[in-house]
Length: 320
Image (tube, rainbow, N blue to C red):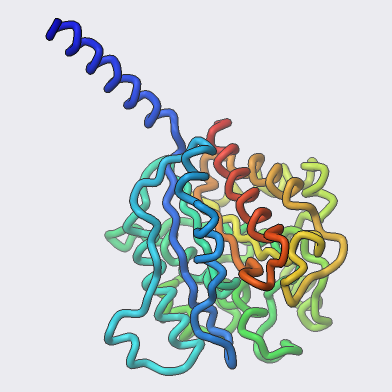
């Protein structure tokens, strides 16, 4: 009898190991620091997505968390610092360190981010290993807006309209260096998706720097151009980070977002694109930024849209 029980236990252990081996490894990191002025410093967006029961959903979708969901905060020394932009940069340096601590092969790193400024921390985390060795990181930036302004071209003065330009080394170099992104991303390592609302001088910058893009229609159709852009980027870099500002979506799904733009894809459209993108082994990280939260998400559609995108990425890795 004891031998029979031991055999059953061994079989169960092997089954559990096989199940775990078949799951997608996932690391979830929340960064609530937005760098925005005249609003609360900490955004509730990341917690709002987490509160949907994200641990359970990750498991249902075929994922397995490699550690408890991480929450970025300034340390005691950093808390003494002032300036929303500076404090956001310090928080993103912490974000980068936590990203780097979790990195391993065949891992999906997911950033739940206050807004697009937090892409800097994810890029810095992916860029350098624990020994400081640099990798070539590609950025797929999916947003209704280009976020490619510099202080000289911005109409709004919002830092949130500049993070891609900062990552490319075109502005606010001290902020980028504080985050820990010592080397800017070459323009050939950046692809925009779904952009349809540019400031006039920002549009000039897109033309000047020959910005590589795919359109909303490319997302809807999973077009040859979308596939071409991903394949060409993959050939130029070692790893790819896909960053999504939720205002890229059809306004019907993100009605509480203050910067919606008509004619966006649905979250189902974009989730299918995520599945396509994350089938590529070099696509290793996803950022979800600016999700309308709480009372701004009256019917819960914005949070569900964000969850659809994470599930789409997991489905892509499962299909490799």
